[in-house]
Length: 95
Image 1: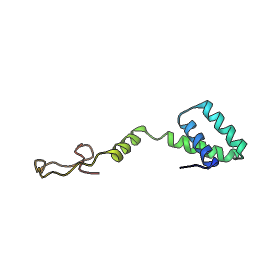
Image 2: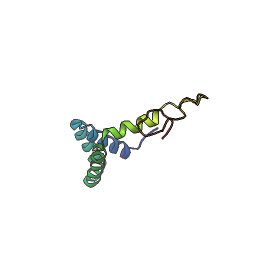
Image 3: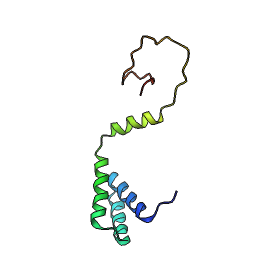
């Protein structure tokens, strides 16, 4: 996948903001200005990255756990018939 220069610069700025990489942010903003991006557009990219950065990390971990969870094959074992599924039961049989 190839990214155009504008998108690549926006990604570089976002990544630098999200990781507090000041040297990388300085370089990305300098490159973006030389490319012709407006200060307002750069500020908006930085604000969006900061807003995302402020989201609780636990939400990210929970989503990744859900997305990467191995699907379990159903067995004919009915030993958990009385089990009540809940968000913290850990059985993997609910969303």
